[in-house]
Amino acid sequence: MKKVVAPLTKDAAKGLRAGDEVLLSGIIYTARDAAHQRLCALLKKRGRIPLSLEGQVIYYAGPTPARPGRAIGSCGPTTSSRMDDFTPALITLGLRGMIGKGGRSPEVRKAIRKHGCVYFLATGGLGALLSTKVVSARAVLFRELGPEAVYRLEVKDFPLIVGIDAKGGDIYDKAGWKKK
Amino acid sequence: MRNISVAKIKDAVRELCLKANFELRPDVMRGLRSALRAERSSRARGILRTIIDNARIASANKLAICQDTGMVFISLELGQDVHLAGGDLAKAINDGVKDAYCRGYLRTSVVADPLVRKNTRTNTPAMIATEIVPGSRVKITVSPKGFGSENKSRIHMFRPTASARQIKDFVLDVVRASGADACPPLILGIGIGGTFDKAALLAKKALLRPIDKKNPVGGYARLEKDLAKEINALKIGPMALGGRTTALGVNILAYPTHIAGLPVAVNVSCHATRSASKIL
Image (cartoon, rainbow over all chains, first blue to last red; front, top):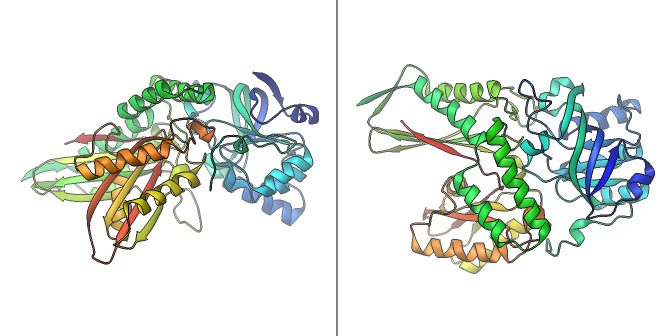
């Protein structure tokens, strides 16, 4: 099990290979459909977004509310492919890592390879277990979106598998079954 | 005539929403355990183990099994000798959902309009399917359905002369197209017959049957078994990273249909297929 720290350095991203099992610690940001749409609309309109993405990792997730005494509620990954249309633009802003479930589009794979990023898989449907790896959480952007707001999470030993690496290697190419 | 207060329905809906979200169905847990025994690859076994751990953590801490606590499907079997008193039934059901989601630390995932997309912040409205049945009891089943798998569901209007092979191939296509996104190992609800809308409702209701309870109709029990075998032979496996378990269960519900048609709906559901029932 490799230990990885977020935000990700270029070297750390390049040192990972599809299929590697890693434990991620550090700061990551949640964003899902509505937040991606808003970020990209702001980028188009104003040429910048209210969040520095340099080296950062975005987690495609919308958690349940935290019970008193807990950092966060259930917080597993959502389907990454729904973010595919927005991702290349965020990668050009410096985004270096993404966490979600399922495969990505050819465009996202290309952007990952071009910019030396990494796409991690979290196991879908493990929201309760993954919540125990979150040390703290607070909404930092688009609070009015509720579960779809951008949350800043501090995570410790968050278990992930590298899905797509900086060389374009994709775990699903090796999984041994075909979409047809 | 038996009087039942709608307040009792509201309380039952609230209780069932919480139970379904915190406690994995026993039949699904049994399915996961038997899948773990069958798997050979260490990765598939590791993923299945974490899925079982997740269910334990959820139940012990009253945490949602999955953060997608779903749009709530409610099946109401209403005895015709029951008089529901004390208010509006649909409102009572939605109030029960609202209470559970707003006070039970569940995610509200419903938007008021599909195009405007503003969150209702109550997880209402629920999808309510009411069936009038003989007797004086009310059976309420609550099933919070996540959309990672819902998005992969499909319906096909086959020709009446379609073969079982063609239907199986359609189901296999749906499973392949679901890939990792629907959180395999999957549970499939398949509705065959009726009209366009009925087939989809049958597919949804098929998910409510325990996956280890045999289909009472012999022909469909066989079709379920054959389909499960072919789906698992795809080797998609847990998290679609390869393995022997792609479907934990295949449940079919059939209904009479028209001479010109053969609707087949596949409602894809994840390894965290959730539901809970109560009879009043």
